[in-house]
Length: 490
Image (tube, rainbow, N blue to C red; front, side, top):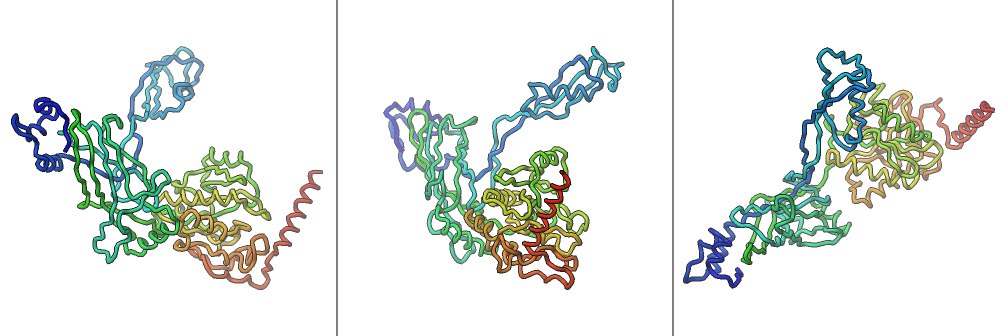
């Protein structure tokens, strides 16, 4: 411990009961006794957390004189359009008319009382996490809990180590590698001060438990994934260096070994009605105008995809991925063979005989990662054509989609695609290259329906009499149909 040159009485008044336990008028502080006491009194908690906004609810009441509104619903609409309501969350807006006034036949001058709840953000709170995903950004928080010690400033220097437990070997050798602002480290510091936040007790830093090297990351993911529970346990080892008011220094070791945190790798989504287990790729067959997609969004149409990806990569959300009332296949709708809420539906907006753009492939990869965050599982990847296989008039999209190209993009995003069930590129293309003739086109009504969909091997060949249309024949048919439409316009 380090001290200043102030007198014992000054030290007593500064540190109160802590220092008075060690100081007397004719003796000095014994360093080992002081350190032992500090170690016992110093209380700091370290944990992983999710930072969430804190909301407060305020009830509002206002008298209102009817101007030109015909009924109470019109009055409510008038209120919602007010400038001071913009950007605010309003709940339970009510209109109570005066005694003797007919709420359905209002006239100018009628009196009513408006009441509502106004929801506003008021700071934030930390939700403690007992597990964190390997390779995902998370907050690590240090919380000062020593009520007996008022802190002026200090630094908590941390390292993370694996708790081997019952495992035969460790996944991590030495302190875990972490990423902070794009830089690889094995140590991190949390800087404590009197003015860090609203209660001066919590100090945070965003980190990713992961090495910088993609190959090293994949190697560690594989090692963790080979364990039965697909996780590892880690604990915090740290040293605190700080100063109390009056200049008294503190130094203490911190070890959180008794309650380790779980670090896990994301698993493949189980095929269960509780989850959206399949990520379904669609194409629209014609370029749908943005205005049309927005009309589906505004009308809350459930028989469309969750998201639409335009040619430039722009994503238009009709429904959030968390919505489970959405259906976009015949298997869910007409055939009723699969319950709604088991798929994520993404529509690539391009017409037949045209290839998807690079921007669409990249946006689709972004959406796959977004979908994986919904249930914290890797969804199984399947095209619409395979979901509808075995259903009369089943859909055949996405057309001319290069599956291997999409999977390569996911690999570059550190998605373990080789470990995730996904539609086999060759099942669609065979030996053909994208842009030439696929292995098959239309699903056959005689095919067997399967849930979960078949992802590998060649599909059954068409029966005799069901002539498969070649790519050239399709192009010629589309050209003839387009020419006929142009002729009809004239």
